[in-house]
Length: 183
Image (cartoon, rainbow, N blue to C red; front, top):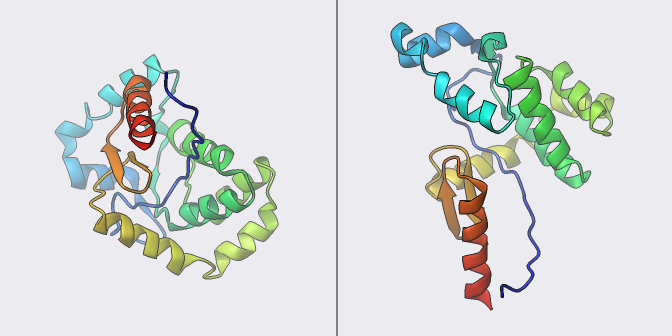
């Protein structure tokens, strides 16, 4: 029998592409430059198929901007203090992957904050300032120093990690093994 454990999920910042300018980029141009026109026609199919199997309705055709996500990560940081982090992260994913919204846009982020029970007006004010930019950038640097190279990366007990999309059974098995090691 595996003993009970307290599990806390914390979303930490990481930039898949730290070269994206603050205003973001045209999505089609970004993807063509990165993958080429031919590969772009099929690159999303595996993700769409996996998403459909899990009830995740990716709508890649709606995405027109590749955002710089620094401000989204700042919102995620603040949402943790407000006890709203899972809601905000989910809302960000839906806004971008399903609705094609620019999650680098301050108004989009403020609207998400409001919808999740935070003060969107205050969030917009903070996003227009440098509040917590250095803290987020420091966390991104720490992740890179730890060897994080992509998302998702799940780190357990600040020292064990698994990278890439994993099924629930793999994650649960990892957690059970770590609990047994601590018992």
